[in-house]
Image 1: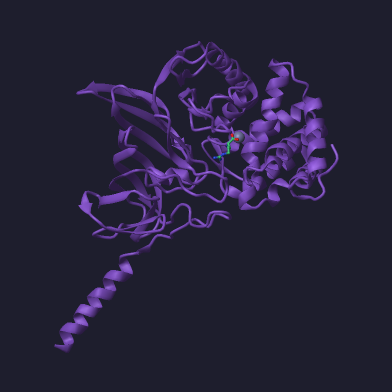
Image 2 (image 1 turned 180 degrees about the vertical axis):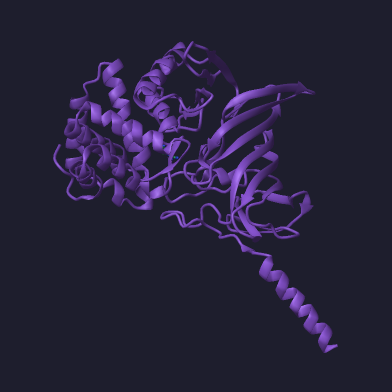
Length: 450
Ligand code: ARG
Ligand code: ZN
């Protein structure tokens, strides 16, 4: 009897030592320590969404292909709200539980480090926006005036699909959306299939380049698709509310010219398609979803259109690795958009930068690298971030400045980056004094003079 118990205990402990450990429940982001999960790397998401736009409910299946980065006894996905019916890992039922926005999954047998595995989650319900300390409004899934739309930066994607919800874990995506045939659906990447049957339409969208979860997006409503194909330009497909005034379509027509301006500055457009979706409601901001930026009804303005286009390179392809460094997206997009405006829309770049400097001097500015979570989209991040680049350009001159931009982008394209890496590029191409200047703009109080 004692021997049998001992034998069982030995087998038990032998198993647990080779069975691995649970993956971490977060990735230690400075602002969002619990966002993302440890122990695996997602390669691909396949998300099937059956949407009832009138009821604002979904019936969904997400299949997540990952590679284990440690021996895993359990791991988490991030999911907020909704009801999970079933989880399978490699086709076998897995135990699961919910704790806040963590979906904790315990596969029937553990997963060896470096092996690929597939996790499928069946879930349903009415998605609710996520409360995020970084922005003063709910993020993720919204339903308004017969339109379903998502705006997810930074945390909102977990309101509609389970993910490793941190920008350092990019993956390819296939999103399949079924809606009543009277509605139009749109999502990221290329529309590869459209099937209509029995009063429903299913569209399949493929994003074959790595994408951060916060840039995934879904729209359902009464939209008109407008395609523009121009030699040397990616496929452009815009979505506007049906019967929109001509000015909206006209405003979007700068897209190919703006893309080609930024290709000259940074390198080839990073993705297979681009476009803007204009919502039939006011948003108060725009957002650079990968290949499908979203604008509210009244923000169709060339500078903002250009700003979201720049983010496709700087933000979406080259992506911050910690949410405390939003200036790497917003400062760059703000500065490059006024470069474009001064080249193509008769803006005076120096007048604009002087005006911003005066405004920030009068109103007080936060050094962009000293922000708190609630300040990640503060006006200082945009304007002082842009002035940082303007000051650098003034010091190093045109040629070295464009080398710096291009090298910074090339080194981090399709990947992640941070301020330290940008400073290393500045030091390498322009010397230590130039890097010190950038640092004083990013870290010092008071703000340096222009
Ligand atoms: N990245 C957006 C922009 O282009 C930020 C908009 C702020 N809202 C948000 N949900 N993150 O400026
Ligand atoms: Zn932006």
